[in-house]
Length: 171
Image 1 (cartoon, rainbow, N blue to C red):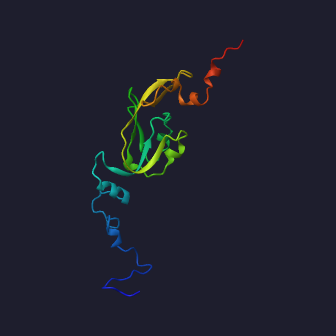
Image 2 (image 1 turned 90 degrees about the vertical axis):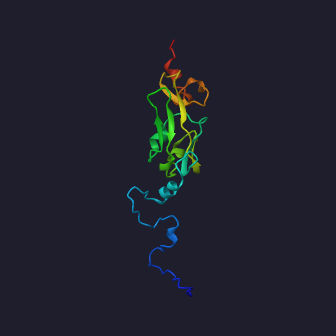
Image 3 (image 1 turned 90 degrees about the horizontal axis):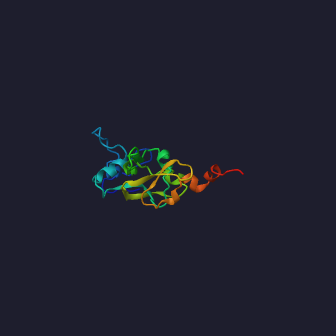
C-alpha cells in the first residue's frame, strides 16, 4: 500500500493503533485511582448524574404484570435490583442501572414476562409495593401497588389453588 503524507500503514503484530483508541480514552492509562476503569463506566461518567441520565442497560419492571416473587432480585449477579424499606409498611423495588451489564438473567427468569432489559434508558423510579396476607394460605406477600387486589391470593396460590385442599372436610 502506498504511503500518504507520512502516515504509516500498521502491520499485523504492531499492536493496537493508539490514534483510534483516543476517542473515549480507552487506551489511555488512568492517572487517577478513582477514575472508572471500563469503557462503559467511562461513557456513563460523561453523563451528568441527574434523573435524565441514560444508562447502557436498564431493567424495567411492568407493575401490572409483576407478581412480587423477588426472583429477579435473587438472580441478579450485579445486585442491580434491590428491595428497599423491606421492614416498613412501604417496601419498594429499587433499580441501580449504573451496575447493569445487560446479561438478561432477570428477564429470562421471570415467568410472567414482567421485566425486560432495555438499552439507553433513564433509571426508573422505585416501584412501590403493598403488603398483603394471602386469603388461601395466610402467608404474607407483596404485590406492586399499581395492581388491584389480585384476588387476595399470593402468587403460588394464584397459580395452583392447593389451599382449597387444606380446608376440605371429609364426611
